[in-house]
Length: 239
Image 1: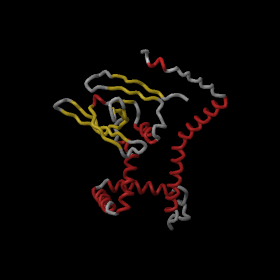
Image 2: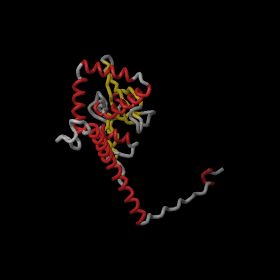
Image 3: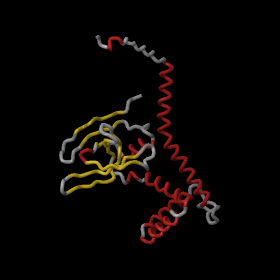
Image 4: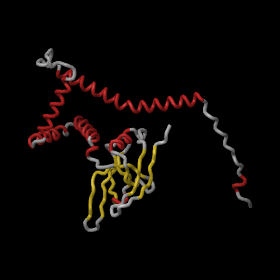
């Protein structure tokens, strides 16, 4: 009996027609427009948010009797007052009494059903915005199975004096909400190092992988050896 593959006729794939000049132009314009949009959206959102915040601050401050129609009644004075207030609050909470008052306020607010939910979400959002100061570096780990890697942030490190081994605490965020994720304890020799910065990694997470860095280098760097195994340098495909 012959091979069963011989009974299957070969199907020739039709050659894809060469795109027309208009199709190339349309693809070029669409690609560059989306690239410009993704580049300018963060700046536009930042400007809009700042204008709204300054407007609200001005409406609260410029309506006060000792501010209205005075020489210091100008656009942006509310933001200046807000910055001064934030600075003074920062000085106060740095003291023991100020910290006690803030903790007492948290206890009271956490017992109010609706307020505690809003307070919790706000704290998570602020923790995300300030997380770059808590993450030491970006790494990759084999997760959730061998052969597949996930991006994570190093949040701590533990060392055993008996076995001379160390493990790294890695927080693996979810996309596009990095406030939830998984924590993994990974032997340091199994960590895949990268030159990706925390800021670039956060952009990658918030965009769901749309905003890619120009290139990412991956390498294993064993703790007890000076040499390292370069896995590769991966570049974003050009348009």
